[in-house]
Length: 189
Image (cartoon, rainbow, N blue to C red; front, top):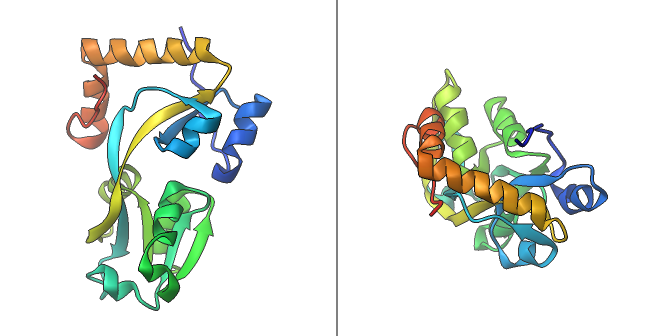
């Protein structure tokens, strides 16, 4: 009973678009205390890592090898925040981009030495590609994802949460995860 229309947005503008009613919810919101101040969040539905993707011809093997390199990251994201919190930030050139897929496309085109992205996006990109990519064993942490709603729109948030819970209970959520990721990676209770 809920029609889904997927619309890409500029991540740094997500709260404004939600508040202004341009969008009704935000998929793949990182569950962090800052987000919960201005946005109502669903139950977390998946965990992921913040990982560095490199081309197969790269000599980068470890986080320390990124020194002097150019790294693409989604502007305004928790991934960018995690990178900014590391010691390596002073030794790299950061290219903030509109989204994770743009960072991965620029990596593919050789415009970047590495892309720091969410693992779900990275693995989808890697497995869909004819080229070889590697993921550094060093990552910048793990985060949970949820769906974000306007604080004053509990009706829609509750309805979507009910749908997610029903999909977990009847196995639909696991089947979707299996289709896209090869296993059930959902964490809905």
